[in-house]
Amino acid sequence: ELECSLTGTWVNDLGSNMTIETVKGNGEFTGIYNTAVSVYPVKIKKSPLLGSQHLPDQLNQPTFGFTVNWSFSDSITVFTGQCFVDNDGKEVLKTMWLLRSHADERGDDWKATRVGYNKFKRLE
Ligand code: BTN
Image (cartoon, rainbow, N blue to C red; front, side, top):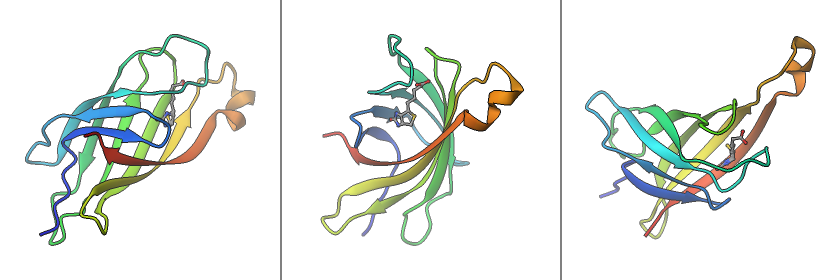
């Protein structure tokens, strides 16, 4: 039986890790994100994440999204993705993200959003 649960600790291809707490009955969850990299040369701190997932379907490979409000910068990242079970029976989170940096003026808005892809594996 395929099982894909977001609860637990995950590590991505950049070496960042995150811990997702219990997923509530309505699909909402909270967690802590510890990024391995930063746009700015500042001391990285653990940051809160707030998300929501679809309730398990027949295959239990739900889509989800979450926001990270960086506690050490004035940026915000939103992630969206899906939990899959791969051929070895291992869970993998395939996500894309948008990182919004603070623009000091409206004229800088155009260069304030980065986009990317992250793949997360369960930390064992
Ligand atoms: C910042 O630099 O202002 C906050 C940290 C941003 C880290 C980004 S979010 C998308 C990508 N995936 C990660 O795990 N870290 C980077």
